[in-house]
Length: 505
Image: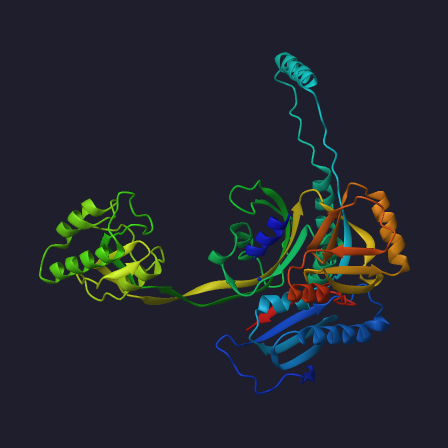
């Protein structure tokens, strides 16, 4: 599951009322990684009474304000906006921090929740019954006739459940419900198997093919009228996961796209390796000092007019190309070579030019330039799109929500062992204590997990009924880690969920 979340995570696809927030100094020292950002969020008020809209939006704004206090932010403002009966908050600020960390903190709609591991009982069959089944199958196959109809594989229960939920959501969106708000509602119902991505501008070659072929046949504001089904792998050797997706195109435009081609240099080299250099042959006995001395000698001979090919055949320790005169089949400039080699090769300006001796973890190189292709930029008209995708992972649920949530926490304390190692104790109020007791009594030898939203903080196997109303978390290894975890567990949930719909930097 976490691989899927990470992947989609690496795949996925993207009158104003101003309130000045002035806690940050306006003369903040701008470092080289200082950036200004604009994040526009839709506030999902679908579960809020109309009379409470303004109060809820103000509460959301105040919580976002508080969350931003944790970062080094400057020139902050929050703008409220109401368009087409949708309510938005746009955050503008400057920061030197990682924007992804800031967004993760801001967008944490859920807070503490305990989840119960779902146990799927294994179906065991002994060898004798398997043999009997195989024999029966063979007999049936032998007796079959051509007119026997093919039996369609039954969909798994989770596939039917998820496809039904996805289709219901799609029909609501096609009937006029806000795409982003409905996507957010879907996430809240099953946050571990659903992901929403709202992209920035992307060209066709930057988009997964299953979406690109549809996006550029649609119009701005259009929702694709069918569920999109495909398979995804979280990494090369992983089993494929069935994905169901809902797609909306927000904007389409055609612009001048500049394609940059970096400089490339066809290269040959002579490598002088030494004992313990990277990938040096086991028979190499030459010291590093001896290797440098030999490389300098070869360079002098080249400077005096001796043939590069002949010296490469005689001296190069790169056996893959020494006999061809040290010719490398891939040009430098594509990032395929180690940094020291690549930089030296790209510094060559003329065909036939030979570099100085260059050191790398492989030894000492002398590099000769072949054909040189200069860097260039070309501009051409090309369409691009902004779009949103709601993803459903078609696989069994691993965890089930329980009723033990943030509101049941009465205290979180950091305690230290005699060795001054920190751990955290979560104490629950009376209602939470009763819930914890029932949960542990009903899950003996099963696993319970403590989550903050989608993030699994820790899990444990229940050994006995918990009657104390307390849970210990032993995960923190440092005081700073313990402080950060405590703050995360105590982070107040948003009174209405938000979803990012636009980001500008």
